[in-house]
Length: 367
Image 1 (cartoon, rainbow, N blue to C red):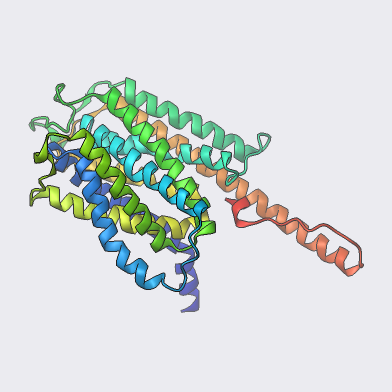
Image 2: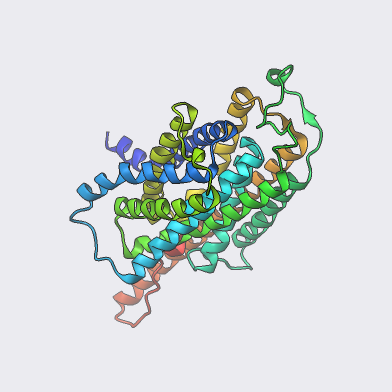
């Protein structure tokens, strides 16, 4: 039993991030359905974070009561910045871009997130890079390939793929068949910009958790800031359109509740917990799973039509992503080897009574 318990502990970070990707896939389909029925993406963002705040806040008050550390100005401005980066800027761009493209296209474009997360983690010294090492070279090459794949998806459409289950079905507004509602170039730019903000959010979350290691309270505060900031954006964009705030009791309500509870409240919390041991790049590394799930579900549920150029671009993005992950694993193995070499030497020198300098390798360095 002890062996199974240890195995579960090792597998737990992987299981929870896979759960997050299943959650994102479901949200993408529900959100696309709600947006196609006329729901404002800006109002959707407000309702989503309002629901998340109401659900998470009670748990934060109860469980973080004794663990909560003192709020400083440094922590406060980081929370405000996180609330603007992801809940306000990223999600308004993301869902507006989704409305202009398709669910599959949106999920595939989000695979550039790990590459941007790697670059930002590198810039913030949360990720180590040595240009002479094979692992670091793979991470840099993977980032370039990932961005190239995103450009292929954006600019190359290619022939339509006639899948057996889509034959005879009429292209819906979400399938890319309606030129009046689709703008892949504008949508992809919005989604890509949103992913940059999302990467900055994840990196800043990893930094903030070192000063404020209470995941539930941090999640509740981010959602609260997102609700306030998103309300301001929605009020400006939807001014003179009170009908945009009407929430219908159909897929719109389901999408708001699902996205608020699963993809905001629970996901922010899980990200915070896993990030403290595995780092920000690991958290974003499983995004291709969401794309595969969305591609399968959207072709059945939303009757989306696939195009060859977008499939090739998605393959390039996934290839680049796993180059980054392979490089990261090589770097971690290299650091572990250096640790193993240092320890016996230190022990021998200590035994001889000689002075020596201890080189500390922390979890941050290995991430």
